[in-house]
Image 1 (cartoon, rainbow, N blue to C red):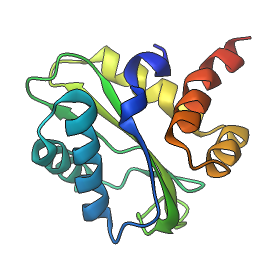
Image 2: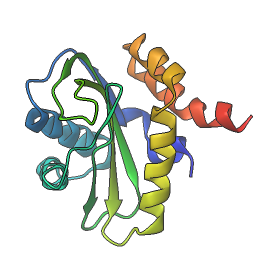
Image 3: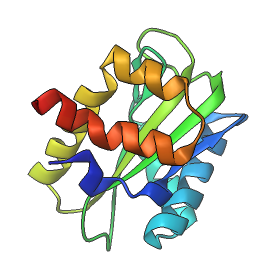
Length: 154
């Protein structure tokens, strides 16, 4: 599983601020609609519903929200960087500024887990997170995320 295959350049965004986790999910829904033609409300609702089962803030300012969506044909990624971190109930109680959301078909099974593992491994890389935080250009952010896995394999 390759990050570049699940994350379109159009699915990467940097914004200055978002007021809440709920608002963040709506922003991610808008990105999903633009990049993949998904229903923005469907994406936001699915992410919110999954989040109600337990927070997806994994620590070090990173969150990995994920959800399954009916009608989706393959795993899709959405990435957002927020200039002013928000409270996310993360495991380390630190606010979140890097969000990599995954959307999977209802019957994705192993593919969803593989994608989550790849994204989780990438986002645990402190060097990558530092580089992401040092850039606000969506194209650069996408390139850093897509090339991260290739760098690890080399």
